[in-house]
Image 1: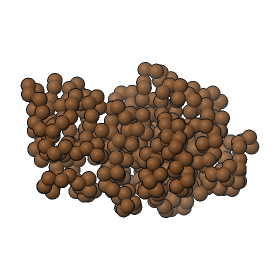
Image 2 (image 1 turned 60 degrees about the horizontal axis):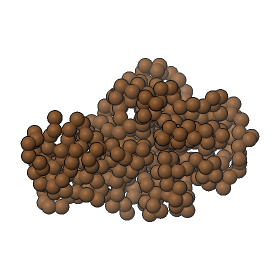
Image 3 (image 1 turned 90 degrees about the horizontal axis):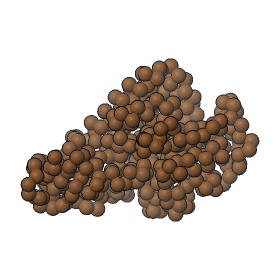
Image 4 (image 1 turned 45 degrees about the horizontal axis):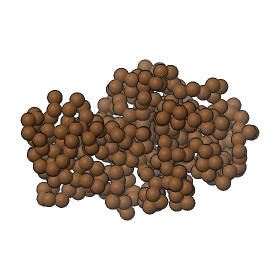
Length: 386
Ligand SMILES: [Zn+2]
């Protein structure tokens, strides 16, 4: 049934805010967006003084670690956190991990985050996406040197499925190349953590150090890897796996020259400010990334290193740590760039014809003629699904 939603504000995207606008939807899809009362002859829902806006996109999370919330030690450094995480995770059944993931999706959705880039190591969260309990892209993550590489089963019937390599310092370089090729051949995004920790940087630039010991402990032979390299970003670019369908995650240790090279290659980056602050005591330089022309999306990592999977919460953290960024740019990161990162620009990220009608609304406390994206940073804001 065709419906016309009228509202005081229709926030189509970061550059397009319509005062006294409308949104026509049918069958879960947006048919048209415009100013004024909209077409005659459709059912009308008048949302009064509300603002309508696209759903928030969590471009990087690990839903299957949701059961670990508050149970992993985070004050003894990153390597200790990873070791503790593996031990704690081993104490849960797949059923418990799955149920916690399902609850985490519902909680994030209640705060307006309706699209997820899920990185699954154990493979247990796929049914959430297959059964449409979660929207977005489900990445099967692989690391080490897997014996055989292939896209996950039945991926052709499930266009929301793809592959992710864990990181340059944990995954065989040839495996990274093959995973990227498999994802590209299927027309899917490919994701990889990049330049997150000092340990990763030490290992990639020297071939030695604490991470080398950690890999050896876990039986991963890295003697044939092209190390040492200049830095993790150069290493990944040299592997030839970075293009406009590549989503790199974190870039916590990188600077403007790397941001520019990744932007030239067309990559999108997902940043997880709250997780980075907890695990590494520092935040990525989002202002410099934006200045370098890099498309920045927002993620949270898992509940094992972040208080919530809500991108609205993440936007507020970004606003606090990058005061030079315009509120509208932070909104773009949370919507349009998130959708781009997941290869879902036609369905999510903006209120445009053809996009999903599953979008959001809130009632600004302020009145007046001018919309402010800073309203989103008010902790008391109540965002609902339209
Ligand atoms: Zn991650």
